[in-house]
Image (cartoon, helix red, strand yellow):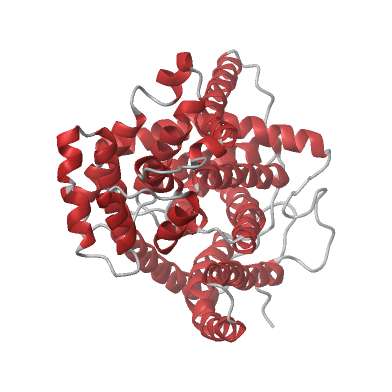
Length: 472
């Protein structure tokens, strides 16, 4: 019986693999390349979450504006956040390939009313057109706005209910329907809105400044030759053929193609029988499918690792979680250092390429979900499962094995490239490559895979929290 990993060697890569394994690795690599190229091309057609995030941030600024001290408004909300929101909404609606949703058209009409002259208010063309195109259940709200009826707070909520409106629409309706307005949403939640606005504007700016300072310090130490030497790259005794089989065959072909074909249909049937809410079903499906995707490559890795002999100190993957404090501080410092570079790469892509394609679909699911259990499933997937699995593949296996032939710097670049391409998003290719460089640099310079996992989890956690702050 031929062992999957060949003859293990503590001092270097294993012996040359048999011909059948090399042929299987080559076939897996070809299939992987075809799937990844197709996935990158398909990402051009996926919707992007960037426009939704832009609108949500402008809505938050408009809602929190009254709670911001007057001297800080130009810095935190701009001079006229409602006008900026209306302009952005108009731009997105005009650029969209499909007709805008009725709810977005209502928001635009209300913003035009809010900013319009008395003559414009008498016209109300947008509202009148919308009244002829929505169903009978949603029409009473528009009619009340057109008629200028006196509406009590309880009746206003009844009129809004069929629309399931975001907070900005609730605020505008509250302001524009006469009668007893009660406390409008922006006044009821003024402190909470202000704190959320600070979280999505001020905190990132502080992180960027801190990261830039740490990055400059790191560059200064490198220029002065005062950086500590990187420890030897220690990893599993696998050959490039083994790693190709693991990533191209186990992760891509089996994990991303075969496993979903086997797992997804019965999973969807089970969720339908449970009659769970749609958002919760999506959360469970994402978590279960990602966990199932992990199974094939991790099982393959377990079969490849030597079963005899003593592994090196720290194990084949070099987790080295302890001391926990230094692992966490190293992860946090590396996260801050990579943040300005990721931000700069995203900014450059936006300026060079007007429409680079869609984002990770999980981002939109988090942004639009209001189910706490669904959000918990998304959080476990993004903050625990994904960092552990991806770091095992790209920094635990690929980087140290490649380092035997390319050196530490070359291995960091290679692992970052594969990591970025594997996410199948042209829009996020450059930022993910930079993030991969940061994760690989941390793994190489610290000799600890655990630190890279923590940095990855912190990055995903920061993104996740930003989405929650902008969610309605």
